[in-house]
Image (cartoon, rainbow, N blue to C red; front, top):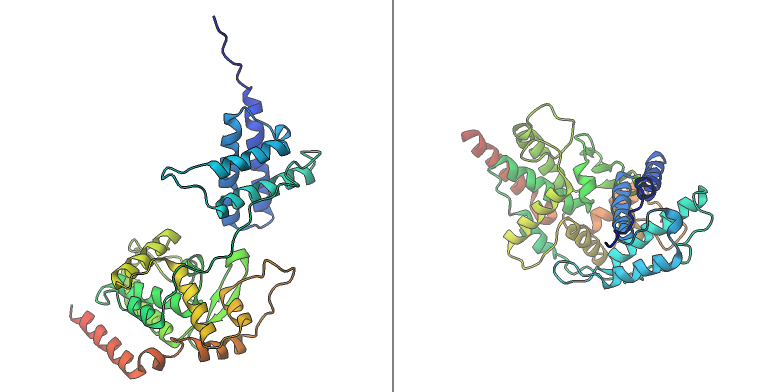
Length: 342
């Protein structure tokens, strides 16, 4: 009678997971962002599953040839739809391994780093597939039904994206006091890389946000709330995927024939401001970008200069540039009257 292959002991099976958990705890303790912790856990989890299928259970068993074998497997892997993993995805999974094994070596879990000479695939720099024109952006902004609280909220969200080019995570985390109408700015707290910044926001976006806060937000809240500016139909803070769905819904409804999500507005704002003469450093500051090809952070631009250039180059920075102030105020008054009569 054939004997079954001996299974590794449970303690051995747990060794890789134990080391990973210790690493994830370490980066959390050292104030890495929650997104980084989540993504590193996911990328390392894929590698662990691959290792278990091959009977590899401890960090000490992982050698450079094994990592190169995993890299080849990633290259030849096909998803359910038959498509390969994007090189960006392959790079992310291998980069997570490189920093993980670097940590293991530095903390004396391993004597030698098997990933020290692992070369991740190069990532090409591609232009965004779609960028909106100013008229297309305006068309999207006009799609929400302003007779409904949710529509008024959605208009304010779209205006905020278009006016500031902030990330969806940053918009979801905004608090009621973050927009400053008097100064014409909005404070982004704990953005990507846990960096705070203050950026300009147009008068029109501020007007729509104020209308949403006064008329729609109280009707959407189910309780006292935690001070989050934008809440969903359940009265809770938005999740990022919900914001993506919101933008895509209005993008499709606009009929302009372009696809995308929240990031489409970031590309659009950067493109339009560049076309109107904005300095690259100003746009980098507004977008919250850090130069990954340099050891230095981009030169910080004073908020007054940033506001000046923003006002001169952003199509929706002033009410008069997209819609006359009198017309907007009249429209707002009319909508308020209609809601009062409902």
